[in-house]
Amino acid sequence: MLRYAAIFFIIAIIAAIFGFGGIVESAAGIAKVLFFIFIVLFVISLITGRKNSSV
Image (cartoon, rainbow, N blue to C red; front, side):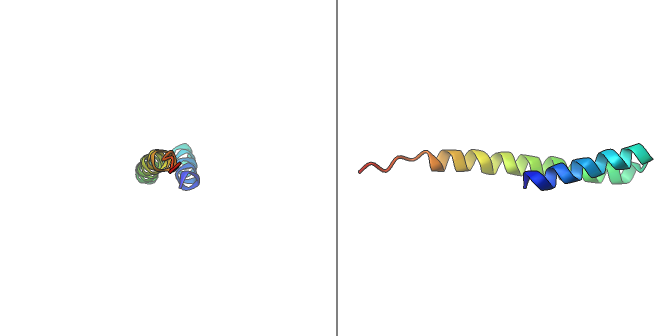
């Protein structure tokens, strides 16, 4: 998921260079949403992976 966020970020940068404003806003928005979803899933996996079952 972080890879897709990086791809959309690169698309937004390239579109900004060429002056496509609408594409920049949508690609940057998608990249931002994917990045935050990645962060949430990463934190959840850290929390659930730290459970110690030494019973």
